[in-house]
Structure formats: structure tokens, C-alpha cells
Image 1 (spheres, rainbow, N blue to C red):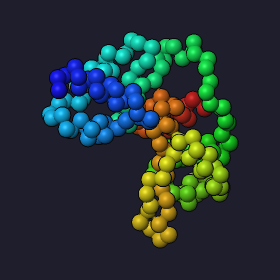
Image 2: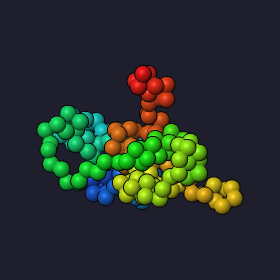
Image 3: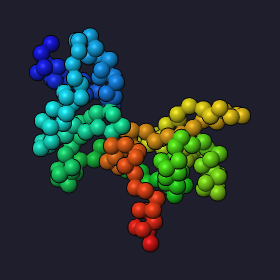
Length: 173
């Protein structure tokens, strides 16, 4: 397979995927075609799409196409109903994003209030959080982390791009 065909195949894989495609998954699919430099191919594709209406974007080493930020104001098509999150859900999301992986009990300790199942369900439904295994402590509680949809929604490449707590405090004051 030549470089152009490889690049077209990677582009097609990302375009046709139902959700952001992990770099490791692309590597697995392409492993049958021999040795290649996936980083080079992905960087070329990112460069090819940088000044177009659709851009190749990555969050947490997962790749997907999205509308260029410069055109979002011109697009008024809404395909999903917007749903406001409760204050409890916003607080819970903030705690998960800054303290992940975190258990429900830890969230409750930080919030000083109980976390109801519906709060976690609403965040799970919009795919902003996901379970990340269980703690090796009595009761083996589920730990929670943010999901790639959280990163996509807030335009973050990784969770490390969240503003620091001291930066937030300076904005609020």
C-alpha cells in the first residue's frame, strides 16, 4: 500500500467511525498493511484539513472530524434538544473532572451533600462521565472519570487542559 492509499484509508476510517477513533485502534486496523508512520499520516491529515470547513481534531488520542470553529456561528441547525444540568450535576461534574478517578463517596465528601443516582445518570446519558473500574477497598466502589464527549464539548485535547483552580478563583473574584 502506498502512502497516498494509506492516508486515504486513515481518513476514511476516522470519517466513518461512529465515535472518535483511538490511535491504538487505527494502528490495529492498519497493522496488516506493514510498517508505516501513523503520526506522520495523522499530522498530514490535520494539516490538510486545517483551513477547511471541517477539521480533523483529536481529544485524548482519539480522532474525529468536526465543524471548523470559524464557521460554527453560521450553522444554526440543531439536532439535539439542549438540556440544562442541575447545580448538583454541575458540582458533581466539576469534582469528577478535577479529582478523577473518584468514587461516589469521595464526591459526597467533597460536596458535603449526597449524590443521587439521577445526577450520575444524567451525566452518563450525555456521555460526559464513565465508570473507570473499581477501587481495591472494602465494598469495591465504582470510580468515575470524564469521557471523551466531555472533552469534545468543552474543546479540550486532554483533561490536563482544564483551567487550574487558582485561575478559576481569579475569574470568580
